[in-house]
Structures are given as structure tokens and as C-alpha cells.
Length: 121
Image 1 (cartoon, rainbow, N blue to C red):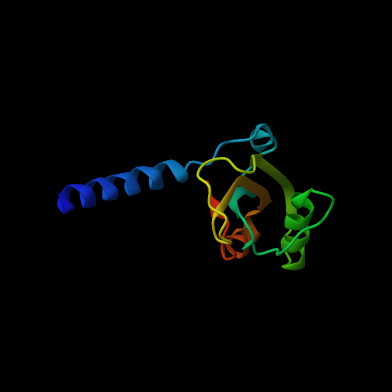
Image 2: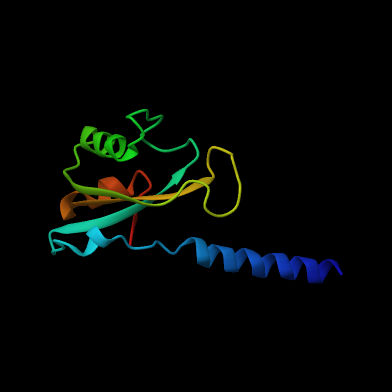
């Protein structure tokens, strides 16, 4: 019985890992793409994002842009997709909120943005 439960939990864990890695596309991402720039994505957490607490009138894209610019990154575009509370309920700081921030940066800045938790897609 323990073996069946362990196997089931392992399979469910793998399924959820695959599902959670899919990043939905936003309409703006296809516009103006070229070899000199790259889109990167960051799944927003409840309270453990690299840019810290943001109270910019509800528009966290401003905080994302400001944080990256402080790091010397030339931000070409910022979008957000998803909505708060999508998926499983988890209120711990490191849990995902359901939203995904996407930034378009110059190719030269990609490594700097990946270093703070953004992913290529």
C-alpha cells in the first residue's frame, strides 16, 4: 500500500512539474522580435520577488522595469499574463501568485536577467 501511494505521489509530482512549466504567450511577444532581443519570463511569487514590495498604483510592471533598469538592463517591453489566485492555493512567500511577468531585453542583458530568476522561453 505504501508503495502504491509513493508511486502515485511521484507521478502526480512529475505531472504538475510539466504543467507548471508552460508559460502562456501574450499578443505583444510576437511584435518586433529580432535576433538582438530576447523575451524572458518570471512567475510572480506571493512576496519573494527580486524587486521587493511594490505599491505603484497596482501596476507591478513599473516595479519590474525599475528594478531591471537599476541593474543596468535596457528593458524594451514588460507584459504580465495570468491572474492572481490561478491554480492551487498557497500563501507562502515563495509560492506562485498565478501571474507571469515577461520582459523583452537586449541580447547583451539576457544573462543578467536570468541571474535574478527570469527564464528563457
